[in-house]
Figure 1 (cartoon, rainbow, N blue to C red):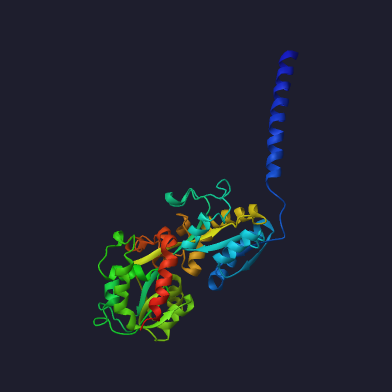
Figure 2 (cartoon, rainbow, N blue to C red):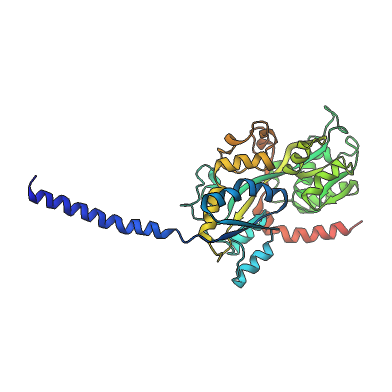
Length: 355
């Protein structure tokens, strides 16, 4: 090899090193120092316990950063933190239409999709800008199997309203969310024609069932317990609440037909300290394996399409996203509720006071 050729090779190698060195340095600088802890605000209770087992402990193991969990979920507190610049949470759960409101109000940091891999999520969720789709849950009908025998069981909201054919005290949530949709379905509206909701028609239908509601539940734990204690024989609850009761031996059955399915979400508050590590937590939350195992515990599956590979096959029939259950349900239009929820809730409060 000539000396000229050697000089050319050396020059090329030095040029390559010169180009690579800044890029390598930039990558090294991209990850900020690790904080002692991050704070994740969630729903508390059994959900927080499951999050601790599958996600928080793994984040601590993987990164050596402690996860402090707080609760409850509170949009008003999120707004106050962002507006005052005193943001306490690194990541917060956001419920239902509040996620839409938080995004529209500029309360959330943009998701870094170079860190968070949503490629195995349903296509309509893969380009989320601010709201991370944490999991899905359904509000479904449930009833006591010792009261309604096989072959004589309610299968629709029309059946729920039919107190002659399916007698007994009922329970519904003390909220218009879901109940307006259920009332319209009971009145014959097709699931794909629900939105925009005909609010007047829904309240007229709710008038028919109101006196048969023994208790208007206000907490998830209460919803299933009312059936266990026989204060009601027919009611509604979030699917995970019924699953926990069934797993503990309660004689309850979930009816997935005409269930209301919706997302729960995570977001990083605008101006959050250690927001980068919040992104890293959401990247972990998007992984299939912890999502699949989380569903085993709590009954609320994540949206990674590979998650069920890590879920106990015996659990899959109890999940809202199972192939049998998903087609029977309708997706709640969270944007409609974000636009109309406050007005409807005011009307609900007045309606509840009426005899």
